[in-house]
Amino acid sequence: MMFYGHNITCLVLRYYMFKIKVCNCYNDESMKKLILVNPLGRKSGFLLSKITRFQPLGLGYVAACTPSDWQVKILDENIEPCSFEDADLVGITAFTSSINRAYEIAETYRQRGTKVVMGGIHVSMLPDEALKYVDSVVIGEAEGVWDRVIKDWEDNRLQPKYTNTRIDLGNNHIRPRRDLFHPDYFWQSVQTSRGCPFNCSFCSVTNYLGPEYRQRTYENVLDELKDIKGKYITFVDDNLIGHNTQSKTRAKKLFQGMVDLKLSKKWWMQASINTADDDELIRLAAKAGCLFVFIGFETIEKRSLKAMKKGINLKTGVNNYKTVVKAFHRHGIGVLGAFILGNDYESDAYYRELANFMVHSGIDVFQTTFLTPLPGTDLMRQLEHEGRLVHKDFPHDWDKYRLSYVVHQPTGVDADTIYRGTNYIKDHLYSFPWYYYRLAKSFLSVRKPVTCLTVRKLNESYKRAWHGAQYKN
Image (tube, rainbow, N blue to C red):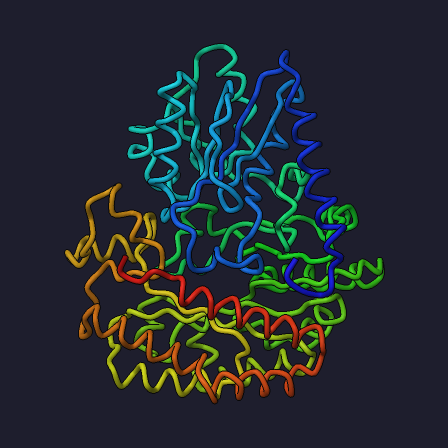
């Protein structure tokens, strides 16, 4: 692991115990074999660091839903290239940026006569495209239909499409097969909710998981946390806190439960900007071990916020972004601020203004990506209708939809200006003296040594991600 003084010998032993366990559980020739694949298109950007890559949790849930008379193995290209091991059935999931690699893996297995099922957010939005490369597509959440997929395969009547109704998380007690995740991951991923009512223009989560904010009970989440051996947790919910009184109450009970059980976990979450309005909630989160919070600030241009449908940000107000940061700093929680470049209304002057704002905002870590019209988003529908997509030779061009490549024509700014502005901003963030000014400011604001160390490591990782983002390649 990268920090907090882990014993290297223990890590080596864990790795070899994982290898032995996987080999032992995959040597029974009498059992049917299911290979689950997490493909990787290119190892760049956020995937270059252990701190910014995460376990393929969806495959862990699929494995947990697979009948016990099947052997299951996850081939995870975040760690190592797919070895194309023999299997009776193959399941693949992929984001848009890696979908062509997923199709390549699928075709290799199908040439061997192996049936391939694919799921995930991209193929749920474009199932007919996927069916050119696979035998079957799962549209939506897999847990409710996976047993039927397996039964149909066993009966030699696999269907082209399986569409699942959204599951009731309150009564769902399925746990992901953590024993199948590679031990090289730093964070143990936990999901406590699904769905989002906000429907931001650039996001397909509402279309994929629904507008209803579905939640596991806090007791159920605590039971899972108690069983996780790793100390470092990432809550992969799009919004752990939620958006109403009920969801905030659940979050507070979860945090208080973590304190009462003395779990001693260190963790981070994604939350909306209005979480800063509840000081008691933030205090409990800090007490429960929260290191930092990921917040989508997105832009300081109000017209762009309106186009993105970021109503919460507009309500909070760009002028209050610094106040939001201070609300978390008061309790020793760092802030990872996400910003999107490539909107309409941008210019060289805007990039200079944004760089200056970032340095002096108090935000501890920055994630900057390009506005990208992904399948299933309102943004994609709008840009297709207006004829503003520059790269639209699909599926070939999906490789460019990786958040670090300008794939559409914004109004008022061209691609070269956006690339130039991005490099100006990142030079400003990571060059002397501003980089060290930002770190010093963060250390003085959060005051907790473990949070300060996390902020430093995250900054190093995002700086590496910037240099490895492979713009325009």
